[in-house]
Amino acid sequence: MREIIHLGCTECKQRNYSTTKNKRSTPNKLELKKFCRFCRAHTVHKETK
Image (cartoon, rainbow, N blue to C red):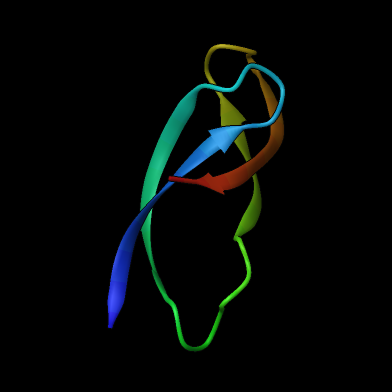
């Protein structure tokens, strides 16, 4: 039931991370604060397609 998702930076729109999530337990889009190597700062990363 777990699916692979990609996390994209909200500042520069680059897809930096890939992870898995359970669609049943977290139906909303995932939002994490991660390090973006393109912005060289910690920014919010949202789930993308």
